[in-house]
Image (cartoon, rainbow, N blue to C red; front, side, top):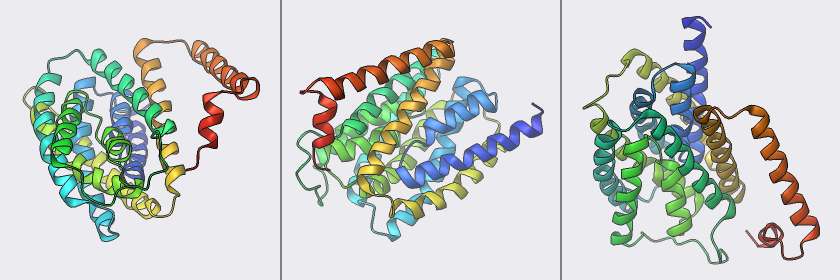
Length: 290
């Protein structure tokens, strides 16, 4: 592909970054890092650092639309975000000295774990989501851990913050989405500061990708209040799962036929469990009220 075609494709795909952030409160880095690394051709560390700027700026813009609809828990978000900034800055310093392939594989493995948590949901989910702020100590500890992960691999913003707020904190999905954007913006810029001590960015490209993502964020924010919460949570998990597999395939050079064969085995196993095993966990989960 020519340079101009590559740039156009990169910008079009970047719109999806904004849609993901506005709709799901996360997934921005999950898309941005592969787009910059595999489409725009940046090396892993530069792609991760650039994604922190793109996602941080887009999140800061998108949070305004969610705040207008009352979908931001400010106290929780600011405390979580402040703790996350500390962890993200330290993670950014560390990430600049870790091999790129190791970073990308760690990125994908975290995505797999998070996808499983979001698709499965919380145990005993019959309880109503909380409407109050989370305990400060719990928020600080979660923020530090998530921030450290975000800074190291340039991801883990929304796709770790949203599950933390939904699965551990009990916030409604729509509120967790809006609140996570505030946290992501704070942590992303802190992580970027750490990375910029070791990485140089192509700022014209980064600013163009950011502008396209901001446009997409307005679309995503409009959809966030419309899509049912249960469908939103499961769709988020499936999306993260697919992206994790794609990153692993790329980094480990796994043949596509092997991925297809593994997928067929998993699908067949799930079907056998559903049809022939009375105590199948899939069946029990499906029967659990949302």
